[in-house]
Length: 340
Ligand SMILES: Nc1nc2c(ncn2[C@@H]2O[C@H](COP(=O)(O)OP(=O)(O)O)[C@@H](O)[C@H]2O)c(=O)[nH]1
Ligand SMILES: [Mg+2]
Image (tube, rainbow, N blue to C red; front, side, top):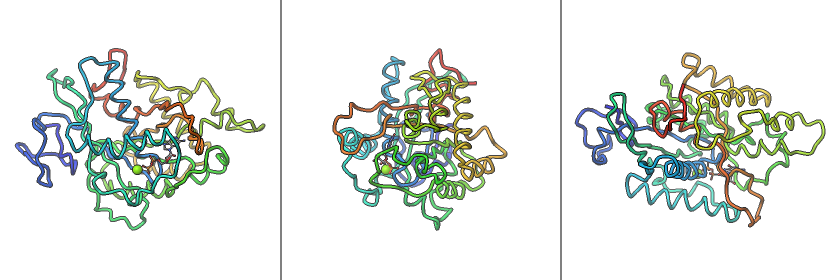
């Protein structure tokens, strides 16, 4: 049995036909493989845009590389909520940067899991099984709250993958270097370190795979162009040999991912993000292969104030965290891709 409850992420009992909350499971659910993912980050860390672009990129990759696979919403609720709460803001973001309302008035409905079909892929016995991506966006307010009840959001403990997204401009030691490098953001969220503390409390003794992910990486990349002399960041970020200097397109190579992990870790060390690095190292000391560093940009470039001429978006390495997990199951892996 590879299927879990899409609401609580708990393993299902044999023969179970409803979720632990009593809602019906999709037909054939118990024979499928589920990949249960949580997106965790402070307010305005980029979760919604990331999720919007992630799904778009998965759809596009499947279309271009795997003729027999289409990624689609598995139910009407996912289809509608994705469209209204994620796809639409994405297009609005492309048009203009008018301040968007904070997430305070986002309804709870948006917090329900989204279920996407990833198509059929052979299991260890070479039988084709349907795979599902179950992904949920967690309220940034909750994750920033120092009084968060560690027993709330139990699904963290059962998740296959937690994507911890953080805004590099909110890391205290990094912020000064980025002064003037990006348009003032209309909303800002809490510090990533506090969110990480809460993630640690929520997972308790469990160690789901953790993708420690710098969001809005385009802002750091813009340091490469900064025309200030004696700028050590310029030479680091402009290093064309670095894995983080390029997107790998649809290809997934385990070694490239590993190198990127090491580069991002050392970049964070150079930026003196010690608290973040140490907390993660300590938390995963016994299972170091379960965490990895990533850098993504949903938009590909910093939004320019009210500028209306943006040509669109050029997402950067958005699929990496999810492929790091899915690759092990051979899902969305082509002949040229490698996983260990
Ligand atoms: N430069 C840059 N800004 C981004 C990116 N993704 C999000 N943002 C900015 O961050 C703000 C918050 O993003 P959003 O996805 O709504 O964050 P959420 O509150 O965590 O869901 C957006 O309005 C964007 O201006 C990115 O990839 N690059
Ligand atoms: Mg959001």
